[in-house]
Image 1: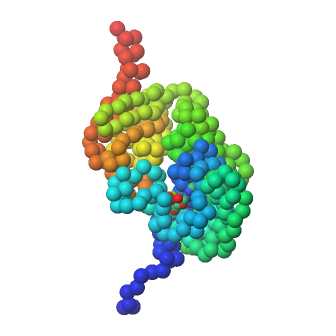
Image 2 (image 1 turned 30 degrees about the horizontal axis):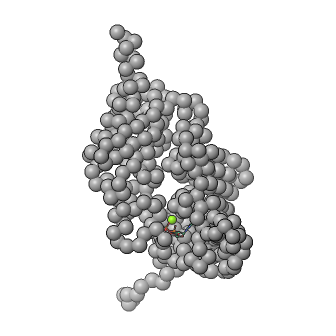
Image 3 (image 1 turned 90 degrees about the horizontal axis):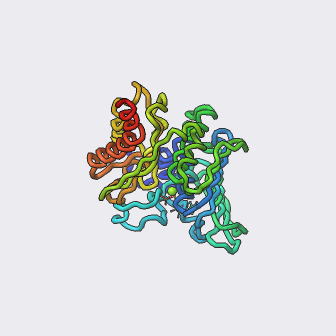
Length: 339
Ligand code: ADP
Ligand code: MG
């Protein structure tokens, strides 16, 4: 056996990239999450060839200090948490400081950012984790991030990419979830120059639902609202007569983060009782707010899965509130009609 040694930063980044950057959609998700964390009110995403050729995310957020731009590409470099305690009270989407070094390790990256309104910014170009150049340039406040030729230096990973249509599907899905989670942000998504999604960013969730699922779907939505000491829930669920063949139309959002959780999905479905036809699922967007100490998001690198500290209570609450919304709008009128 060879002697044990610590791997250098470049290899460590490539290993992390294997977990964080599964496909173009993961890059889109990480970049847009950074834009959201930066307080942006507009985020424009433009991809070419399913994101395999180019992914570009432009935002009008707080930007990066020119002096910090290189540091942002170091492993575990983050402006979002400072100490171990912060880890139990995450309020941002990112905190692991892994996305930028991981993405830069497996693609060609150009980052332009300015954190001031004086037109001064910096450009940095990194290819396969190697710094190619950085220079001061004029830029308006915000960040413009371009990723080209993803996986160009990891042929084994590149080989596993699906068709352009499939990769684009995953990208759209990621943008849909983030747009639903942040109705106050104006999003656009373009593919090969064609506009696929545009949200206004006026805070109206129904308009976002209409932009994604169509106006007729949006019209069937019932508002859900409730609050107890620990949780606040808002959002929309479809009437039981508007259903879909799969669960993809169910979005659960915790403190602005889209997550996947079996228990929450089940709580939602249980709220419909027997109202749903067999193997049919509602369209639903549930936004839950809770103190960050009640949810652990540090479970998985992609942060799609979370753990709740009081899960049984949460599921019961969701079921109760959704059920109340359905009962009020659907069941009571039916009962009245029968008598
Ligand atoms: P994390 O999001 O976990 O902090 P990242 O690797 O995604 O780690 O980003 C590193 C840092 O770069 C962030 O903490 C943030 O300070 C900065 N950053 C990245 N993207 C942006 C952006 N669009 N606007 C402002 N700052 C950004
Ligand atoms: Mg991040």
